Length: 170
Image 1 (spheres, one colour):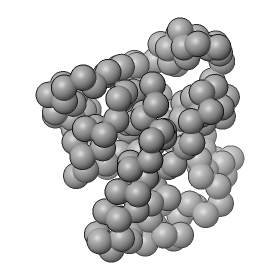
Image 2 (cartoon, one colour):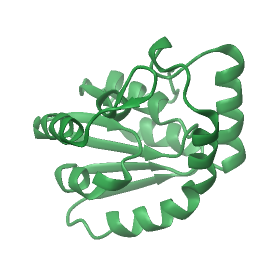
Image 3 (cartoon, helix red, strand yellow):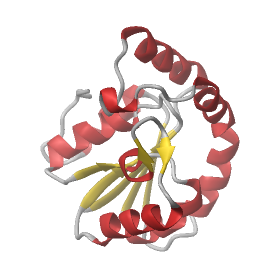
Image 4 (cartoon, one colour):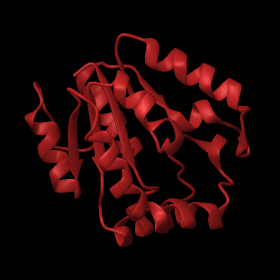
């Protein structure tokens, strides 16, 4: 496992799993939000986004986390493993609520101000996107696809890795 993409809805635990996996494996971590957005949720130009993404996936080893509907297959063909998080919608919503209530944002203060309506729409629509995305990912030859539906499954996944941890570390 040298090139890992972690995908899931908002609040699924992508960043937490990515940070834990990076600490456990030593693989460098990049959050796709950092490549596609400027502070204040200003989307970068498409040419900038594609150039940043191209540099990120050209590396020999990496962990990327985020939702990248338009470039999913581009990254998947370069990845050797995709970890797809599919926890229940209510759990994702609860995590988003908790994050907002305590002012804890997955990538620091820089990302405060995510448009709430957009976040909730993304969360609500994700299960329909997941079916399509998983079908697309299953077409990529040699790709290891791991679907995790709970924190318990995520802990078990991490524990199975060499030197595995049984705890998710935020």
